[in-house]
Image (cartoon, rainbow, N blue to C red):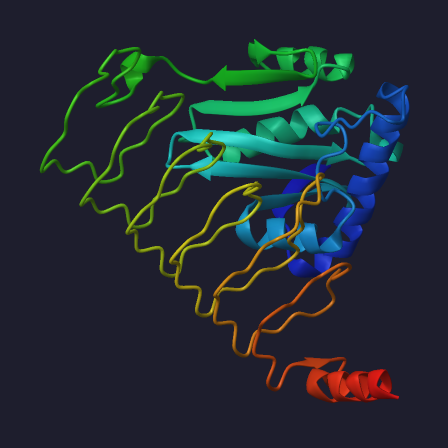
Length: 306
């Protein structure tokens, strides 16, 4: 008996353990040179319980049940009502070969019957995945030396009301238009501009926004997760109440830089602060492991005078 159920936080440890075992086994099978990083085989955070908790809370995460045991998971992103993306699917190596994956794909499609287009990505190295997804009705729409991208369309365009497809509407201007609940998929918006517009509750996922510019925007109560902001510049930004969790400096370890910033009451805990530099700053009340920094500096300067 194969079923799927929404994952809950108490499942995080178990699901992380299974995910790690699954993807590590895939790496042993397909990555002959262990110095190679393949993020489709070992995706970022795949062994992190905190990443699993984030995905349970913020994405659509189902645990896979075989008889009464949790044997894997499937994580999807649903955009609007018509578009879905399978972010990850994994089955415990001890349970593979029992047609669990194919049944789970069928179950997730039944769970979201309005989704007519499904996307996913897999490593170019995982030849078995290529055969599996093609058997499930997916077709390659893009591939590189490292990655294969697949799409599955469930119904014809003629069945969709108000669908505009394969049209060149570049250089078009829209003014005073009601575009509420508009859905865009595989749309080229490069160089587009949005001004004086209401974009509340907009959902943007799996999009390339590199070199974009956001100015004079109200982002209150917005949520940002699983983003690459390397080399970005944030200027004249109000950050009151902002919370950074499980954030790092990327592969290049380029340091953050704060200049002329008011960081009163800021709390940094359980973080890697090696080579952190603080200069020309007001450190009144600042503590490290509950020890006042002012007292530490006072002792230090006293020692220098001896």
